[in-house]
Length: 60
Image 1 (cartoon, rainbow, N blue to C red):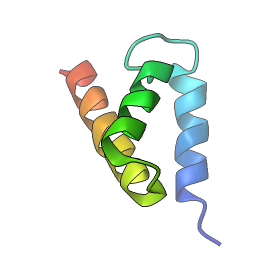
Image 2: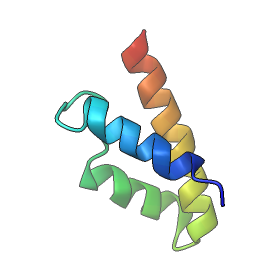
Image 3: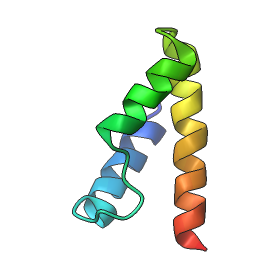
């Protein structure tokens, strides 16, 4: 069984878990829900895209 996502999440927690930089907040989750309704696939897709861009901007 592939564990790419779980391993990446664990790496993130180890490296950035205590940092406030690039974090998702509850208000972000509410915004995702507002934009996508309760469709879980659309919510996941939007969260991944937003998370990528937040990380990209932090790196720059």
